[in-house]
Image 1 (cartoon, rainbow, N blue to C red):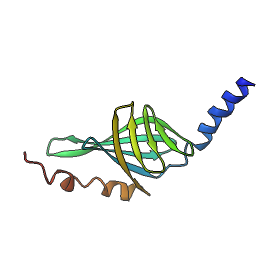
Image 2: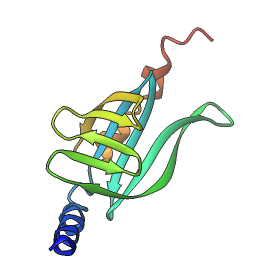
Image 3: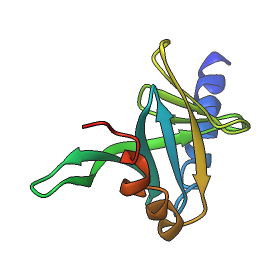
Image 4: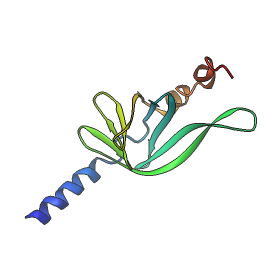
Amino acid sequence: MIKFFIIFYVLSFSALAGELDGKGLICKVYGDTVGYFFDLDRAYEYKLSGGKDGLEIKKKDVGKYLTNENSIFINEIKINRKDLSFQKYSSFRGECKAFKNMKEFKKGFDIEELVKDNKI
């Protein structure tokens, strides 16, 4: 019976993976901006990084994601689907904004807007 419950639990997570494909989130975590775009049952992390001529958006495959009715799980990251709160481990917390497609997601990374208040 316990074996059946474990298999059911694992399959319930797996069955919901992929439902976010084509959508993204941009999160503010302690002032930093990090994005997650979901495609082909995988999560891709987008971060701003210094490039040769200025800031650039870097993309990194961070693996498969899982979902249930309340949360999105990306490795050690948990994002609440109802209020889009971000939690990594127990201490890193932030807030996210959802985007319906890649075009809107990329607009959310307006580098000029993100650095406009920088002093140096």
